Length: 247
Image (cartoon, rainbow, N blue to C red):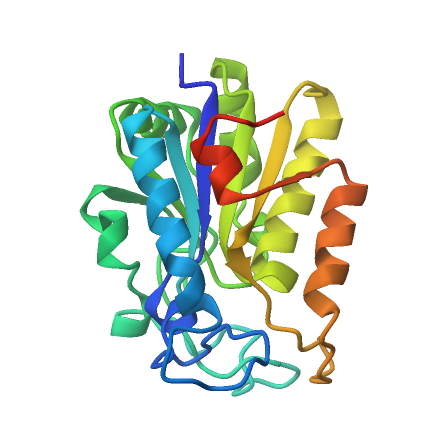
C-alpha cells in the first residue's frame, strides 16, 4: 500500500522557477535584485520536498516537455505561449534540490510527431511500486493541463485504490498548471473517491496573473484559487504542512 499522502510538485523547472527562464513565473511583480516571484517560493518548496521525503510520502508531479509542433506555442497558429521547456534544453530540467535523479517519467507522447503514449496496467503498477520505494513519478505533458496526459487519470485512480488518501500541491503556476491539475484531481475524486483530499500550499505556488488573451489581471491567481476552493480543495500554508496540521 502506498503512503496515505502524496506531494505533487507542479512544473518546478528552470524555465518557470528562475528569472533566467523562458517563462519565469513572477505574478507581474516588479523586478528586484532579491528573490521574487517563483524564486521567492523555492525555499518553501524545498522544505516541503524534504518533509515529504522524511515522512515517506509518495512523490508525484508534472513537467512540461515541449516539441516544436505543440499547439500551445506561439510559433504555431493559435498558440499563446513562447517557447519554453523545450525537449532536451536546460530550461526543461527540474531543479537539483528536488533530487531529479529519482524522477521517473510517464510520457504522454514518445517524441516529436509521434503518437500518444498509453501505459499498460502492468507498467502503471511498476511505476507505483517504484514510487513506494522513493522514486518520483513525473507526468510529462505538452500542454499546461496535466489531464492531457492520458496516463494521469488512471494512474491517480490506481494510487488511490492502493491507499492514497490526500495530495498536497505546490509549484507553478497557480492560474494555469496548478489550477488544471487540481480541477482534474477533483474530477477524479468526484467519480468515486469522495474521501480523497486535495490541499494547495498557498505560499509554495505563484501566479502568472495574465489571462489567456494576454491581458494583465492581477487577480487572475486569486480567481484560480477561488475555483480550486469551489471544487473542494483546501488551502494551507507551508508551516501548517510541516507541523502536520492538515485538516
